[in-house]
Length: 141
Image 1: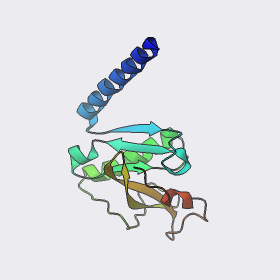
Image 2: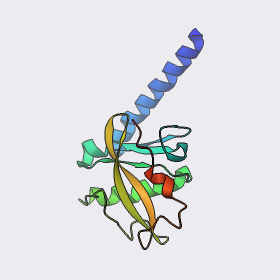
Image 3: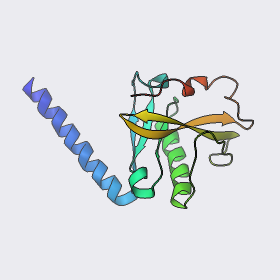
Image 4: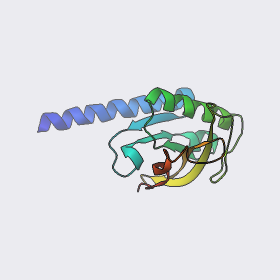
């Protein structure tokens, strides 16, 4: 049992070190959390550091997409934030990620901190023929 505790602490230490490096290099980083029962689809992809570095709420995706795609989406949005753009909850944003998808944001909480959850909608603001409606449920803790 003691060995497992040491292994866990070593992984946590490595994660903390990596997080510090990412904050120093980029001003933000992403956590990919799977099997999180507090969030839709068990997915909780979220950022850290955007609030501190760019005075904008951190972001979250709760939709089952590949990590690489989530990373590209976060990068596109953070790129706009770095230019001074401020995303607001309840507004639809077209032409950020392409593919006929628009983005909307809803305010949520994750581990007690406020985030903007990215909601994917079609070009008319609909929930992509009902496929994405679970994105709106559950707001975490």
